Image (tube, rainbow, N blue to C red):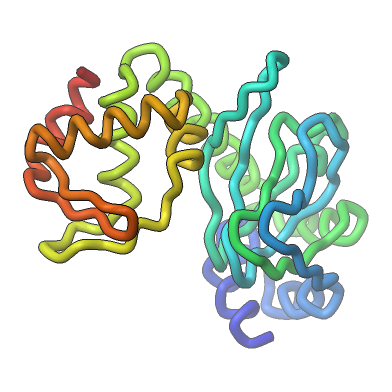
Length: 224
């Protein structure tokens, strides 16, 4: 529990609470374990919870009426998840999917809001969190409007894989890349091979290395 307390002490909203209030929330948190490919909540579901991600990885993903899946962003350990339904009581605009086995600590709306509302600075932080969600979605929409697939894929590679002279483990599948940049796995595969043929990356089934990061950054910025 000390790890949770340390993370919450630095997290938006929770950092504005008193130490007593943070400890009270930790004591009232409900631990829940999820396996890969399970859903914490579904798009269209009223999910009135706040969650602390202890271990694992999650993704916010939206599903279009035609059934097309789009990843909005990923969540990592020590992140806090605020369900939109906590604020407005309306259905969730996206699904929260488990990408790696995860342990979450959850608070229902009725448990967490009374504590949050007696701390005005914490309430203000919530508005910043929801605004940040909106800005991330805006970046996705902006990418679709102004950056073709090659530019979006270049941006994904640069943001996901660390800057290093040595190869990095290839931990993104073609399907995950396709979901993130909004295209098909076949087009992702062709674009990766194009990057390799152009001398931008070196890639095989298990590793990826940057050969010309500067040109890849230029491609990501121009969206060619």
